Image (cartoon, rainbow, N blue to C red; front, side):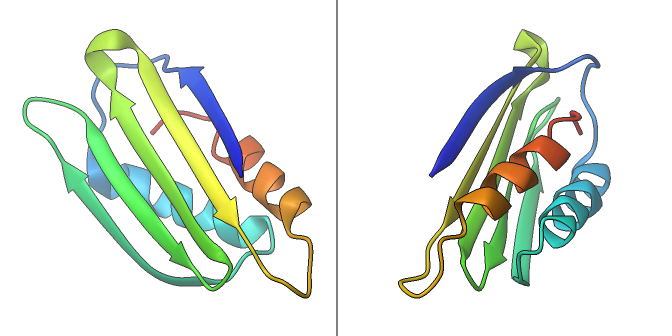
Length: 96
Protein backbone atom coordinates (compact mmCIF):
# COMPACT_ATOMS: atom_id res chain seq x y z
CA UNK A 1 0.00 0.00 0.00
CA UNK A 2 1.17 3.50 -0.83
CA UNK A 3 -0.69 6.30 0.94
CA UNK A 4 -0.13 10.02 0.87
CA UNK A 5 -1.93 13.15 1.99
CA UNK A 6 -1.37 16.25 -0.08
CA UNK A 7 -2.52 19.86 0.23
CA UNK A 8 -4.63 21.11 -2.65
CA UNK A 9 -3.82 24.41 -4.35
CA UNK A 10 -7.27 25.24 -5.63
CA UNK A 11 -10.79 25.29 -4.33
CA UNK A 12 -13.48 22.88 -5.49
CA UNK A 13 -13.06 21.07 -8.80
CA UNK A 14 -15.65 18.88 -10.46
CA UNK A 15 -15.54 15.08 -10.55
CA UNK A 16 -15.50 15.07 -14.34
CA UNK A 17 -12.06 16.75 -14.23
CA UNK A 18 -10.74 14.51 -11.46
CA UNK A 19 -11.71 11.21 -13.11
CA UNK A 20 -9.65 11.57 -16.32
CA UNK A 21 -6.63 12.70 -14.30
CA UNK A 22 -6.81 9.69 -11.95
CA UNK A 23 -7.40 7.29 -14.85
CA UNK A 24 -4.44 8.64 -16.81
CA UNK A 25 -2.18 8.58 -13.74
CA UNK A 26 -2.87 4.88 -13.22
CA UNK A 27 -2.40 4.04 -16.89
CA UNK A 28 0.83 6.05 -17.06
CA UNK A 29 2.09 4.05 -14.07
CA UNK A 30 1.56 0.82 -16.01
CA UNK A 31 -1.48 -0.34 -14.03
CA UNK A 32 -4.56 -1.92 -15.63
CA UNK A 33 -7.82 0.07 -15.30
CA UNK A 34 -10.96 -2.10 -15.33
CA UNK A 35 -13.53 0.43 -14.06
CA UNK A 36 -14.10 3.66 -12.14
CA UNK A 37 -16.68 5.62 -10.15
CA UNK A 38 -16.52 9.27 -9.05
CA UNK A 39 -18.96 11.32 -6.99
CA UNK A 40 -19.19 15.12 -6.70
CA UNK A 41 -20.26 16.38 -3.26
CA UNK A 42 -22.16 19.63 -2.90
CA UNK A 43 -21.05 22.31 -2.51
CA UNK A 44 -17.55 20.88 -3.04
CA UNK A 45 -15.36 17.81 -2.79
CA UNK A 46 -14.94 14.64 -4.80
CA UNK A 47 -14.52 10.99 -3.91
CA UNK A 48 -13.55 8.46 -6.51
CA UNK A 49 -12.16 5.03 -7.13
CA UNK A 50 -10.36 3.47 -10.04
CA UNK A 51 -10.76 -0.29 -10.07
CA UNK A 52 -7.53 -1.94 -11.18
CA UNK A 53 -6.75 -5.48 -12.22
CA UNK A 54 -4.04 -5.15 -9.56
CA UNK A 55 -6.48 -3.73 -6.91
CA UNK A 56 -7.60 -0.04 -6.74
CA UNK A 57 -6.82 3.66 -6.45
CA UNK A 58 -8.99 5.92 -4.26
CA UNK A 59 -9.01 9.72 -4.18
CA UNK A 60 -10.87 11.96 -1.74
CA UNK A 61 -10.82 15.76 -1.70
CA UNK A 62 -11.70 18.32 0.95
CA UNK A 63 -11.32 21.69 -0.84
CA UNK A 64 -12.59 23.58 2.20
CA UNK A 65 -9.53 22.26 4.05
CA UNK A 66 -7.17 22.36 1.04
CA UNK A 67 -6.62 18.62 1.38
CA UNK A 68 -6.66 15.53 -0.83
CA UNK A 69 -5.76 11.91 -0.14
CA UNK A 70 -4.72 9.35 -2.72
CA UNK A 71 -4.56 5.67 -1.77
CA UNK A 72 -3.22 3.07 -4.18
CA UNK A 73 -3.40 -0.61 -3.37
CA UNK A 74 -1.55 -2.95 -5.71
CA UNK A 75 -1.27 -6.67 -5.19
CA UNK A 76 -0.26 -9.69 -7.18
CA UNK A 77 1.23 -12.83 -5.72
CA UNK A 78 3.44 -13.30 -8.78
CA UNK A 79 4.63 -9.68 -9.21
CA UNK A 80 5.66 -6.87 -6.87
CA UNK A 81 3.72 -3.81 -8.08
CA UNK A 82 4.94 -1.43 -5.35
CA UNK A 83 6.86 0.71 -7.85
CA UNK A 84 3.77 1.05 -10.04
CA UNK A 85 1.68 2.08 -7.03
CA UNK A 86 4.24 4.70 -6.01
CA UNK A 87 4.38 5.97 -9.61
CA UNK A 88 0.57 6.29 -9.71
CA UNK A 89 0.62 8.41 -6.55
CA UNK A 90 3.39 10.61 -7.94
CA UNK A 91 1.42 11.12 -11.16
CA UNK A 92 -1.79 11.84 -9.24
CA UNK A 93 -0.11 14.37 -6.93
CA UNK A 94 -1.57 17.29 -8.82
CA UNK A 95 -4.92 18.10 -7.25
CA UNK A 96 -8.12 17.61 -9.20
